Amino acid sequence: MKIRNKEKKQKSEKKSEIKLKKLTPLAAIILMTLILFVIVRKSEEPLSIKTILRYTPENMILAACVLVLFFALKSLTIMFPLSILYLSSGILFTPFIAVMVSMVGLATTITIPYWIGRYSGEDIIQYIGTRYPKVQQLTGYQNENAFFVCFITRIVGFLPGDIVSLYFGACGVKFTTYLTAGISGSLLSIVTTTLLGTKLSNPFSIEFIMVLLLRILVSAGTVVLKHYMNKRTGEKGEK
Image (cartoon, rainbow, N blue to C red; front, side, top):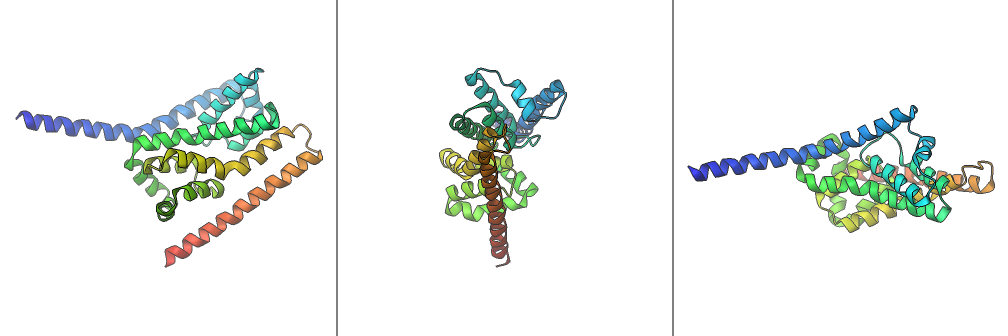
């Protein structure tokens, strides 16, 4: 009798643990969204570069911390694009420091959903696979070279960034591999968009136009690469 009660208790605890793991990503998303909602409501305007700059103090260290906090809020929401944060960084800091802050910010953005996925485990993989069938295309490549897959998904961006991070975390991809590849794949976008912010005060300068053209080239290259990858995976699916 005691053994049966113990087994029932273990099963009940296991079910509760599974339920908690399923609810963790949802709870995190709701929390991040609520915080952003309060910020937007308080500022009485859509979240923009102007809003972000309003919340950043004059002290450079504190400003960097606040901006990284915005990157953290961005990690599980789609209320504003990363480009707004990169541009804000470019406006606030000198070019070198701005790029460094943007890199730390991106590392924060992709780390939070990774660890949520790592905690949630296989359940989140099934959910992502059902909601985003494209994620199944990653499996074959992932077994061959995890670094390459993490790298290419950041360049191509054929899935939302937070979903990709949740997936790699849940799959148990080594964190250092994931983080290094994720930052490397986003490096061109980080640098060009952040530098664009440093020249935003003078949009008719040669420097601004050159950085803007470089940013356009990066975007165009991303579109071409995305088309190539989709075509390649499509051909593999037909075979």
